[in-house]
Image (tube, rainbow, N blue to C red; front, side, top):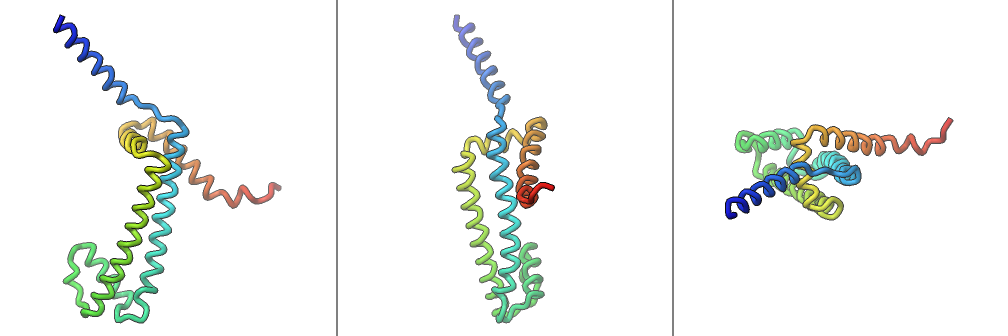
Length: 164
């Protein structure tokens, strides 16, 4: 009897594990996820433009030129900031700019995580993100939904134009 119960428990746990692997996602869930991902991509682009434009303003009327800033930035990304000859004032301005950039990135990340929690839900986000890596059919469905949202956003001006 004991062997039977252990065997039955084992069989049920295998079926349960298989059922968890075969999680299906509705079109509504894919659309919700894709909507947040499209928003995030657009916001990343906007953040990049904002930072780029802001750097020029932040270094204006300082000892740091845009060329020197770029040299310092490239060296900083490589972890070799010391390789660029710069004055103490230039380094101070560079570090201030980097702090402002980090603040903007942190604000974006906070908003992004908030949208995930509020719009998608952490559980669905994690399950769907994992499933998209492992399920080609789901990825194809998601890509179609994502592309539809992107095309709808980029074509929104066209939809307002009168038909001819």
